[in-house]
Image (tube, rainbow, N blue to C red; front, side):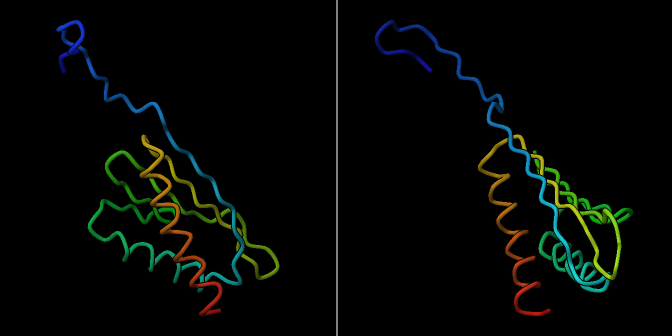
Length: 110
């Protein structure tokens, strides 16, 4: 880009300076509902690379979404949703989508 006042080239940096991290802990009634949630999230992002070994990990360009079980006590399953993104805008968008799926599961199905 050329600065019009000085007619000198200006370097524009595309470095991700506004990174985003979200960790959300949640409790659900049983493992069957947790597995249903994982299945819905997996289906929502089926075109992206996924790892189902421990919970669910979905890899987007510049974003990593992880959902995994923390503990299972008294028929309540505690789990964590973790999103790490290079850019805040993209991280917020994914977090809203995942929390929307969770909200739908908790309020309309359970």
